Amino acid sequence: MADEGRLERLSAMLRRRGVVLPAFDIYGGVSGLIDYGPVGAAIRRRLTQKWVDHWLSHGDIVEIDSPTITPESVLVASGHVGEFNDLMTECKACGSVFRADHLVEHLHPNADSLNSDEIDKLLDTGIECPSCSETAWTPAQPMNLMFSTTIGAMSTGRTAYMRPETAQGMFMLYPALYRHFRQKLPFGAIQTGKGYRNEISPRQGMIRLREFNMAELEYFIDPENPPIADLNRRTEIVHLVPDPDGPHAGETRMGFGAALSAGIVRHPTVAWFLARTWDFLVEVGINPEKIRFRQHASTEMAHYAEDCWDCEIHGEHGWIECVGIANRTCHDLESHEIHSNAKALRAWRQFAEPRSQTLDRLAPNGAVIGPTFRGDASAVVAALEALTDLPDSLPFELEIADGVSVTIEEGMVERRIETVNVSGEWYTPHVIEPAFGIDRIIWHVLDHAYEEAEKEGEAYTFLRLSEGISSVDCVVLPLFDKEGMPELAREITSAVNSLPHARAELDSSKSIGRRYARADEIGIPWALTVDHTSLEDGSVTIRRRDDQLQVRGFVDEILSRLSNGTIQELF
View 1 (cartoon, rainbow, N blue to C red):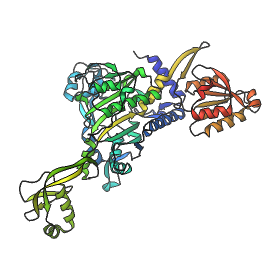
View 2 (cartoon, rainbow, N blue to C red; view 1 turned 60 degrees about the vertical axis):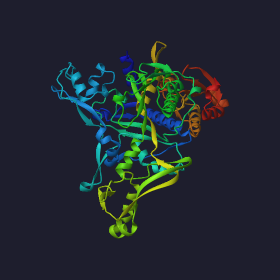
View 3 (tube, one colour; view 1 turned 180 degrees about the horizontal axis):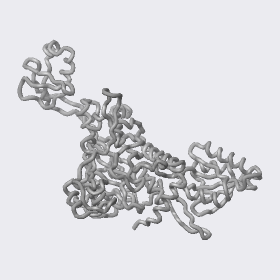
View 4 (tube, helix red, strand yellow; view 1 turned 180 degrees about the vertical axis):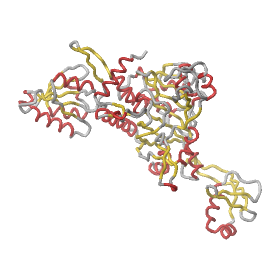
């Protein structure tokens, strides 16, 4: 059972200390929009950079950046215009609008997988309106979650949407990625940035937002030769919730390698990404006992996925999906190839030995096609050579461009059956996608790090954040605001900030005890106190946040250890 008092105290501290605050607060705020204050923005930036570094370290993954505004045609092809919906319902008494599955989620384990008729039946069981407590509802109906906009002015404008995910931008860049990796799979691309979803009824603070921070990886593989990692060397036992409709239904605990061997995880590359997701979450401070991987049932699977797992984290709001790891197969690339008529969304697979192949094709007669079609002749020849489903008879209609067809008559082509040796073939890569909700992960990092205690008769709170996640690495504190201590403290702060991967801030306001408490509350792991001895020999007191233990050290050594991450060894 969640401790509502703890949740309120944590949320109040985050607002007070400039971590996370309601957006546009002086105008009453907007549901589903938040601000990261000075402390929170630094935490978000550092956590996001850790995510980027985590994946770039693999060597076959690169970072890209694509626009947040997406033309409608792209999202028609991806299925978002037709499929990216939630069911909404309206209270007949007060007019309040709600996401329908949220109203009945206590009655069904996967309410978001229900269709409108199923949800309507549950609403009719006496579900009360959260606003007015009445029980009369309109029939549930789909609402598309994308924010629409227009590219261009007035009548020349094109319909577009604010992107609901970063994935489509990476699919658009597949040809450039294929060239970058010298036509060799597997390879991947990562992208971080804003996503937008017009949520019907945002709730739970950072958990469900209308504008949010995403971090996604699209990993392109040959489906006949997928990357396989040796997961049996890993020792962690993880919490798994397999497909409730499958042969392995029921919660279990086992290793990633064992889950793959047992057929619970259906794809070796998906299993590898589950393990690497676990690594990242634990590295940034998520309690491993509060992580589980839940496999989607077939009824809740995304329209593009063959297998999908949610990595859920437990906190003040219960189990919350924070990462989705999906086997998107070749859905996206094939769909974009069809809708755009592009032929650059494939990869070449070289055979170990040449293979004999019988080809049934229509050979174009250039002497007739050239004079007949003139400027379109090359497009006609290309379309004929690309035909895989040959017509039974002539004449027939041949599409040479989107919405443009020509008639192919007798004498323009000759049907030929040829046997040739081929050295390879073109195929459409499959895609494995881990998609991370950065805001949800940050919330759980803060939730898991937040601790309350009593110190000298007063309530004492602090964030036990992992190193490299806190807004700064150390706070520099002059014991007194006089006698040259502030000047030396500023020099040390400047020296720390000149390091490539370390940050410090200076605090000289109020008593030293109050300043320690302020630093602990926002999770700063180290405090460097400048005192009279510092002025004599250049040493400072180093205080560790987690146990308040203090030792002395010389500034040069501290700078070196902050730079290489070994400051802990001084204790």
